[in-house]
Image (cartoon, rainbow, N blue to C red):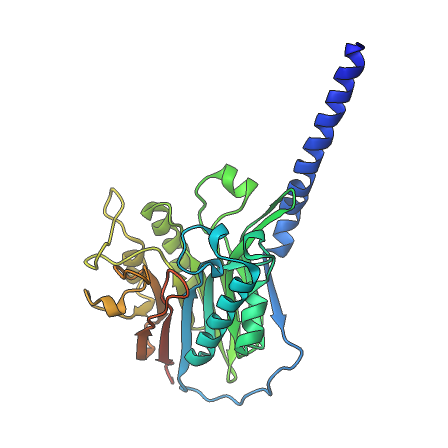
Amino acid sequence: MNWSFTRCRSVRIALVLIAICVVPFAASRLASPWRCVSIHTTDRLPEPQDATPGQQLRVASYNIAHGRGLVDSNWDGGSSVERLRRLDEIADLLREMDADIVILNEVDFESSWSHSVNQARYLAEHAGYPYWVEQRNYDFRILTWTWRFGNAVLSRHPVSEADVIPLPGFAAWETILAGKKRGVDCEITVRGQPVRVIGAHLSHRSESLRVNSARVLSEIVSSSRIPAIVAGDMNSTPSGFPRSITTTDGANAMDTLDACGWFRRSPAQVTNDEVGFTFHSARPRSIIDWILIPRRWDFLRYEVLASGLSDHRPIIADVSPATD
């Protein structure tokens, strides 16, 4: 037997296998920054609305859990038919909520486990939102499997700008190889008035990461020239609320956002009412999803909806902007 020939053939086979695995992965990671955030519109746009200062605004926030429903694994969310049926139900729920702006977390952008559906586009089109923003947190491909998901903002009003907020990551190697939790920063013109809308999904890994992320958000809002709304899955509960936790030095992400003095939240006071809890939707035990509005604005209505389409419950708020 010609061992030299056998070794050469083995090396060639190994190199081919490595190329098959590595090339798609490397290409996906190199392309990731260019796909990180994008603004989209439907073909039929609504007529521009006149400026009406002080008119109330309805905002909603919902972690849709990749459309997998109440199962724990993203791979166990059902067939493509079952996933689309669930997305249709989420779209119907969004229509019923009738919000001007919806912040979505854990949205898939053609990920393999959700059968390569762009969930942001699907929900925008089926729930009747002419404008939407896609922002990817994780974006990579291995062989024929794609992992691409993050935050989205659906809007009935024009989105003029959108950018990524680079929140602190868990580890440098993870950020390089896969991505990390980030936020999306949008400027939306609502009835002639600009509003800054920030969608965020803070890390589930540690309160320390969440505190550092809250500091980033506070700094952005403190320097904003226009009113800013921050909403999403904060994975944090204020001190005194059920299941609240702190870092070793007593810091808490929601406390950090409260302390900056730029926001108002609901509920403002400690509550043990499970009706107002947002997680887990099947066994409510805490509030980790929040809508934060400018401190001079008012909550006219705030509600947590009892839905089992995700492990999070959606929240909705009618807010009144300052008129002067």
